[in-house]
Image (cartoon, rainbow, N blue to C red; front, side, top):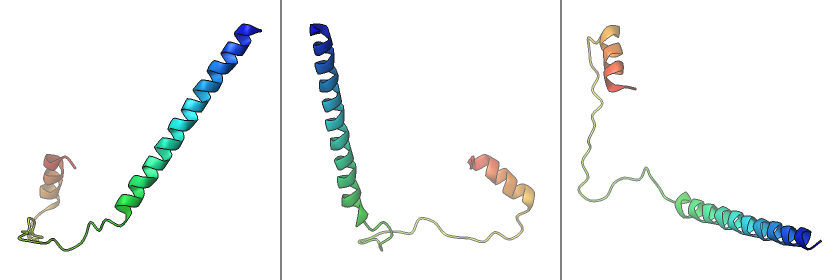
Length: 75
């Protein structure tokens, strides 16, 4: 009877700790989501920002050239 009571109390402690950690994790994720929900990633950059890519249309690129570029970039 005593060992059953000890096992039941240990199980209850583990359940309470697990439930508490799960609730803490859930509300932590909800806080992070709310924090970054209003973050605008695609706003115009401020300051002295430079454009780093230029969409250049390559004329004369064949299917083999595009396939080799695909394999070299690893995409």
